[in-house]
Image 1 (spheres, rainbow, N blue to C red):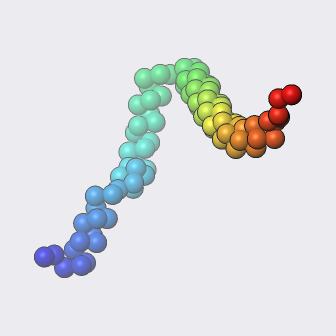
Image 2: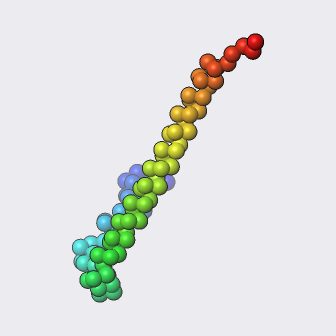
Image 3: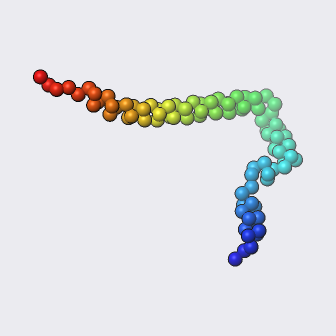
Length: 90
């Protein structure tokens, strides 16, 4: 059995964060490569497209959430309205 200190260090090693793995130099190199590949004029277009995609995703997510909440509200209101609308036939 491993000592407690070794197991806690091991769990820290297998859960790295993205920014913890990439240093400043690596991020700068990646940005330079992206700039060289796409050029200065294409990057704003790519970012606009990314922003539109994120907006559409958030709109779709909000629509699904709203539909689920509306369905729950209708389900809650349906039994109360159906019991009050019953009448005796004459």
